[in-house]
Length: 434
Image 1 (cartoon, rainbow, N blue to C red):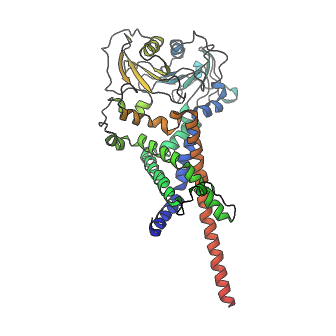
Image 2: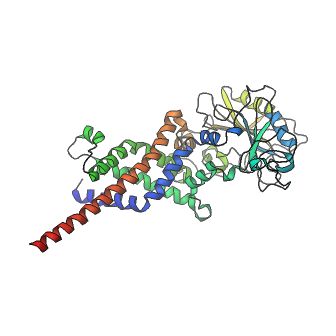
């Protein structure tokens, strides 16, 4: 590579980093947090995730649904206990007919606070510091947390304003949802990939001493220390950052990758290759998915839906159960392999007839083409969960590495400016003395 090209790459790398580094840093650090989002959520709200004992076999998905309905609410998604969240978590139904867990006279916790609640029965609601809360309709449907040992409602909260929810919004759209924030983040992912490529090019040792270039950190002077830290940490994290960047871009701009992978353009509720959409990620089927003839009453309960799903896919773990709604007269069950990280919330989506339990649609590794599965897996590759705890730790460290890269790059630039100013002053002073 010629010296001129190297210099232009260095200038582009430096000035783009100085101008946009803080935004990239924000995305990186929030990504680190989200790689352990459920563990952090459980640590922030311990009373909501503390089971009183071993799970009672009688507290099944159907029992949980009845507890929710007894409170005047409608379940949107029922999540069984797992190693990270050892309680039942019930998200409210959205849209028409979705009431959400009621606070106030229904009993339970404060909105957004995740305070302890009572059982399935009533009693006046309690806000912070144990003070009575006015019996008024809640501002938003609340998520319920149910003890698997007793069926007691441990609490409720509006998760939309939680720390993890705000962190996710920062990571996904910079809190600019109404101003194309998601697309901005996608283009910043492209920029991060270019940073990785130009950084490798600039780092590449011209003398062939790769071993030394991978580990050499000189302590003095300060500008050299910061540059060496920047180079060594950057080269070690470059591959991880590049993979995370590409997967993030694939999540936001899947249509860029479909032609490259030979995947047809999606249609509403269409093939499994659409798993990158928010709807598919939430486990909801699209409007074009199969709809059975409507009959009354619906005989299949949550337990029967789970049994039908496991009979269809033995050796899987159920991660979510979505009851029929006014818009979708079907059961939807999400599953993951038994040996996968619990953070992998769904690898397969099953749509079930609510009367017969027959599988109307399966979206997962068995029905996707290799290319479609590769695109669908970007969601779990991006957070590292696809590679288990090792992958999540790598993603966590790579996000923090962006903090170190920004600080060392900025420090080296500032120190160089200071040294140049000192040199100019010294030269000017020497000229006056002469």
